Image (cartoon, rainbow, N blue to C red; front, top):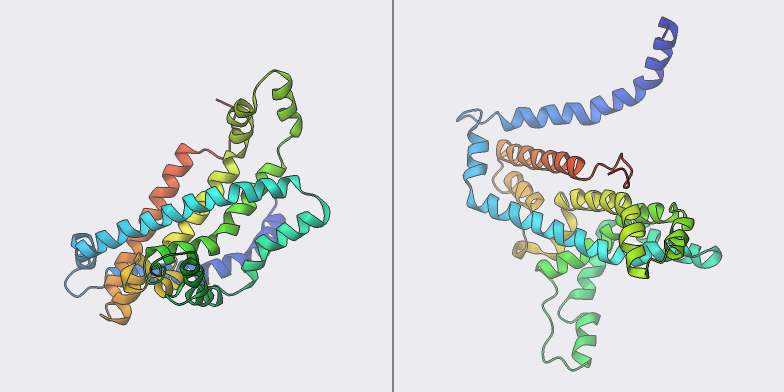
Length: 277
C-alpha cells in the first residue's frame, strides 16, 4: 500500500476513530481511574464489592433474571421467526411491523404501560378475577413483572437474527432430507435446527448481554423487591455518593461480560459452518 493510499484510508477512518475515542475510550479510562481512586487504597473498592454478600446476591439474581429473559425470548421468538420466514406479501408486512413496532416506542413509555396493566386493579388482574380467581395476582414490584416487561422489550432482538437465519436456509435441504426417508422430527433435529443455531445463539447472547445492564424496566416494575446489578450500581452513586465503589462494580460486570463472550466464542464458533465437524 502506497503512502497516498494509507493517507486516504486514515482520512476515511479518522471520524469513526475519533468518535470511538471520545465516546468510548475516554469514558472507559475515566471509569477505570475512578475504580482505583479509593483513598483507602487502589484495590479497596474491589475488595468491598467482592466481599459484599449483597453484591454477590444481586449479581447472581441479575444473571438468573437475564438467563430467564433469554430463555423465554428464545421460546417465543422461534415460532414468530419461523412464521416470518414462511409468509409473503401483505401478511409478511403485517407480522414484521408487529415485531418492529415496539422498537419505535420509548422503553420508558412501554414500562409505564406495563405498570398500568399489571397493577393490582389493572385490566389483567380484573380479567383474572372475572375468570374466578379469589384474589389478584402479585404481578407488579416483583420478578414476575420484571420478566414480563423485559421480555416485551427484548423479544424483537432475538426474532430478527433468528428470522434472518431461517430465511437464508435452502429449502432444498429440507426436501432432500424428506426424500432420503427422514421423518419430520429427524429433519428438524439433524438439518433445520443446526442451521438455525448461528441466529439463535447470536440473538440469545445479544439479549442476555442487554439484559445484564438493563435499568429502567427492573427499576420501575421490580422496585426494591427485584434489585438488579444496574440498580445497585446506581444506588452506590445516588445513595452513598461513592463513585469509586460504583466504578469497581461496573468494571467487575464488564469483566464478567468479557469472560462470557470468550466462553461463547469458544463453545459456539459462529464463524464456522455447522456441518464442519
